[in-house]
Length: 317
Image 1 (cartoon, rainbow, N blue to C red):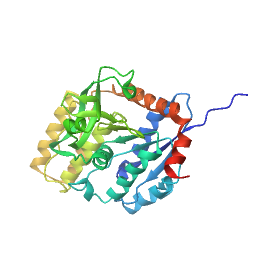
Image 2 (spheres, rainbow, N blue to C red):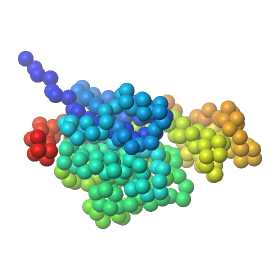
Image 3 (tube, rainbow, N blue to C red):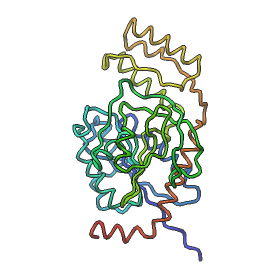
Image 4 (cartoon, one colour):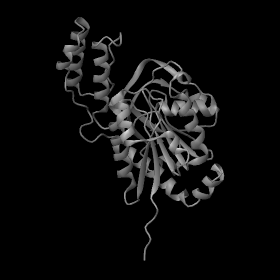
């Protein structure tokens, strides 16, 4: 009689704002599902309670998520920790910083590997090595060329170059990462680190880009930022995502911007262009993203048999 392998247990810590909670679940969940192939995977959902939320957002979290305190007593093989939209200039001033800092400490001794995405990557390197993020003058938004820089198990089988979405207002300086012993696995042509890793008790993988994004994600974020401008919640009109829309769409968005800057009013939002991403329905970054997560799940599977003893030792259970 063949005994089915025990599932890989992944804790998914979702720090996204209310409107993106379910989208982040779907994006990461779909990627894990495709990458898992025949391998059984169980995802458990956790939330840091100090992430600012509306009443509806808190109700949504209560329905679908366990409080982060439940994770401290759980046994998971890996974690995926999402970013969040920055509110404070300094990460230590974010309301959820204490919970996120504790999560970094816990993950080091209690997981085989953890993926830190976007702002979560910034928080993790700050907590581990005191490396602070560096603000951009303008938000880095768009689809950027990315190049593999070294051979590493996490990027095994990925192409030498690919395109990947980025959507962030801050960067971790590459030279600071290298000085602290991080391996830069891939970087964008803009010069920033895209994927980096550091050996430790847990194999931490840090991703500044968004390989999990679906084709329309950047358009939705752009519309959100334009909405804030029209509503008077921000002073400057947001820049269009770079290398993302086709030429007719880009022209339509430029024309809409001129109208909005001439007559700022929220009722203009009804004329916001539909826009067509260059990538089409299946983005070019999907295949590299699947391979990245296949490699990560393979690492979890390979080390899972040794994990229980290691976890009991590190937690005292």
